[in-house]
Amino acid sequence: MPRKSNQRIFKPDNRFIFNMAIKDGKYKEVLKNTKISGVPKPYPDELFSSWISRTATNLFMQAPSFVNIYFPEYKNWFFNRDVDIRVDEEIIENFSRRTGIDKNLLAKTSLKNYEGYLSEKINPNTRNNLISTIKIKGTYAKLPGLKCCPLCLKEQEYFRKEWRLTFYPVCVKHKTFLLDRCPNCGEPLTIFKRKHDIEHFNCWNCGFVFKDAEPEFVNPKSKGISLIYRLFKILNQGYFKFGNRYYYSLAFFPVVKKIAKLIYLNGKIFNDGLFREMELNDVLIKKPKSNIMEETISVKEAYVVFSTVSEILKSEQMLDKFVKENKITHSLLVRDMLDIPYWYQQVISKHYNKKYSPPYEEIENIVKWMSRNDIPVSFKTVSEISGYVLERRKRPDLIELIN
Image 1: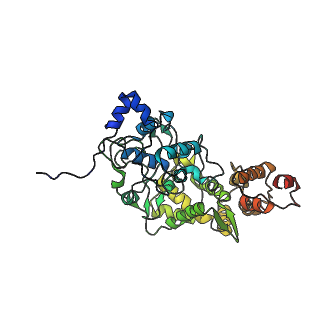
Image 2: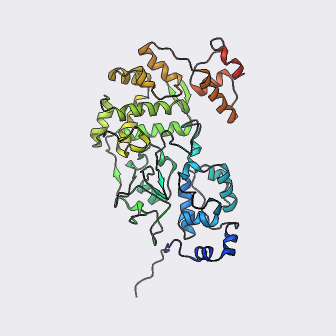
Image 3: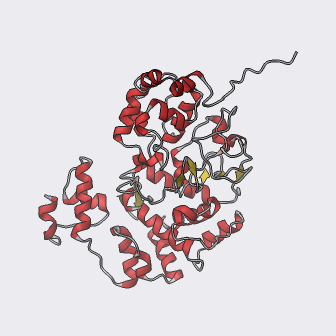
């Protein structure tokens, strides 16, 4: 007789709880108020969408059905936007109360956790700087903003938060390019829906199991892995060193995006490091369909662009060389930048003799952010946070605001 497999058969929405919730109104009322058992703890670096999908799988459900049944207050709308950004304190509190998972653990699964490090504000209602866009239609992703490393999934099957970062297109551990589409049918990765009888994360369209994908390794001669890791390290530690001074990461990533857009959107940019990485990894930067980099840049394009940016921003000399070689105008260097960090302005102003003093409104926004985060406000601390050198004698207009 053939040996019986010990593997659990996963048939979402085909179990007792699902059937009873649909057919029995009384039982449905019980479910929406009961404490949910069998809920796994989120990993420290796990995305909320990954955790809720694993939870639903444990209960033999698709993620949307799990939310509709146990959290009917969110029925039919919870997944129609980017859930990794939209989860707020109220939602976290609700899921924590019902699942028994510590709310601090759940809060860490949200991309809003990057507030104050990547951007001042992570907005659930619009695109966010350097967070790849997924653009949900129904419960399916229409853009390849969600990425994964198949080798990481084989080790521990959950989706990492850093895989949503536009500047993180590779796995620094396994030195592979991240996967952003199903290798079998080409659909963008979606983890809320999966094929019946497949327990592992798989393509909603064809059922391909993501961890079984063939990894594509970065050229071993490439320097890009360490340069990409440098960006990720700055984000995690919350500060960076430029010259002999340290600045908060909040003053770093707007410049990362600015330089990245200059390279990605302008096909005439000259840089030895960029050409080296393009040749080593067989990458050609195509003319983008739109100016929204977070939506259009491919994994390999992101690798060569952001590794080049990381190298350029290692020192004042490298940034100075980049500006000179490409004869980039001052207006192009600051275009679309609402807040221009002092350290960046210092470098580019040398070429154009244009002094920069941040306007009152800019400093006011920084002070408001500091107050919300319980950071003491003084000329010294505001200078450290903003990257601008602010002196009482030179900026008397700020004395009342800062004191």
